[in-house]
Image 1 (tube, rainbow, N blue to C red):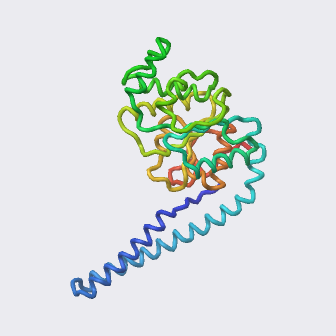
Image 2 (image 1 turned 60 degrees about the horizontal axis):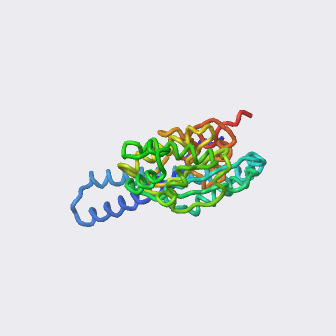
Image 3 (image 1 turned 30 degrees about the vertical axis):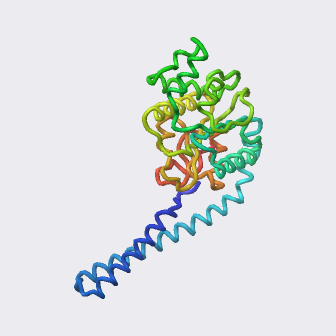
Length: 286
């Protein structure tokens, strides 16, 4: 629906570069270090920076106008989109209040309840504590014990999180994995939203999370990773590598609409305002 990308960060960089160029040019000219040829180059660079800054300003202003127009259409797009759907939410790291609020707003605007359950994970994981907790459960979970089983363990936990029911692995590892948890653990989810609120992980934790993402993505319900506009570092490539759809602007009406459309069954993909997004919104077929 929208072709324009919202380059706030790029705009800021252009202004900074412009200011630095002017300051450096003036300083050199005043010191007598430079010559007329150098000043000509500096002036050309300054003019180029000014032109780039003006172009980004025009893009920003156009996006704001487009976003305002979409905000008027937003209620119609969202109306009853997720009626009867049960959506679960997992934070890979601590709960991020702003994103949690944006996700709940998207769900309620689309006609369903806020997330039926939410968990946030303790990171990095303690592999020894996890193995000890699993060993205490007996032979039924022994296949997940060991450093080389972390990816399989993560995948099984991802499947359990969506499926609900007894969730024996989550129960066994609650103290080792869950920072915060709320909601109904028994209901099957019709979709899942993933937020990476921690920094990227390495080693054992990375292998565990690789499995978790894969388990969520392969659970036969829509699974969507979300982040706020300009998130650094972005988790989009990680979500895509593990088979999740993604939305990179859940703090915008367009992002919340994209999330709701994906959870309602729109084609998988990466949607939002980043340059590498497939589009602002997923196609709806209508």
